[in-house]
Amino acid sequence: MKCLSCKNGEMEASVTTYFADLKNCMIIIKNVPCYKCEQCGEVLFSSSVAEKLDILMDKAETLASELTIMEYDRIA
Ligand SMILES: [Zn+2]
Image 1 (cartoon, helix red, strand yellow):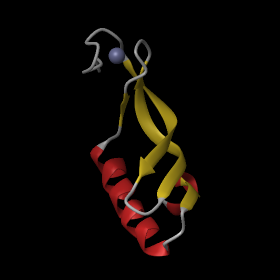
Image 2 (cartoon, protein in one colour):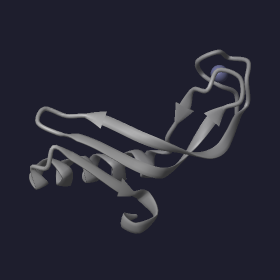
Image 3 (cartoon, protein in one colour):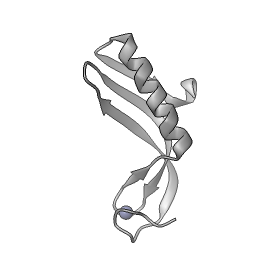
């Protein structure tokens, strides 16, 4: 799979740390499976992973904690 961003590098299976700055809190999710471009570092999530991240962010908002740090492995 070619990178959509630089159109040159190959996307390789990897893990990343996902960071989101929401209205009233920040959320960090570690060890999120992704595809990462070997050249420009562009990160792409599969649709099932992206869906799960959405659900987690909804949950994090209801926790009303300023900063939430989660491990993807433990919650997926
Ligand atoms: Zn790239």
